Image 1 (cartoon, helix red, strand yellow):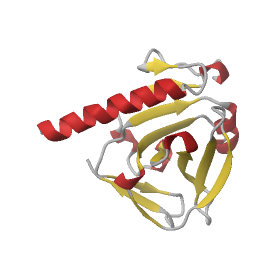
Image 2 (cartoon, one colour):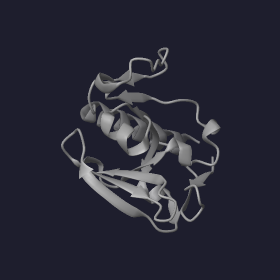
Image 3 (cartoon, one colour):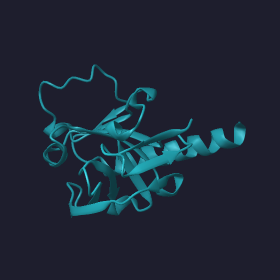
Image 4 (cartoon, helix red, strand yellow):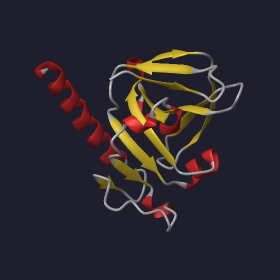
Length: 156
């Protein structure tokens, strides 16, 4: 399914023909501070996208100890991407940047539940919830998703 989106002003745009490998909600205080809210993102291999426009980057040490690189539109300052040192070649796109966020059927993984706001309820909608970054769990889930997508590609 073709998916597209971009920043608020339209200077930065992206497109892909693939579904995300991983759909994540992050509850950490760092994401809340960066966005003013919790973060929901769709994760893909970076080469599965075409990007148009300029991004500027902000780098910092994430909760897992690895460096995180947040991409922003230099004009409207919308956060348009996340890259992790520990997952080179993979990019997270914030759910709100997609032109049609309603096309996604939910999220798979919830991380940093130890910092989750007590009034946010999920009603059992996640396949996995972890107290911290869940780096090993996320990598395992990503690997399973990759294998699943690989098998589906060759079966169809």
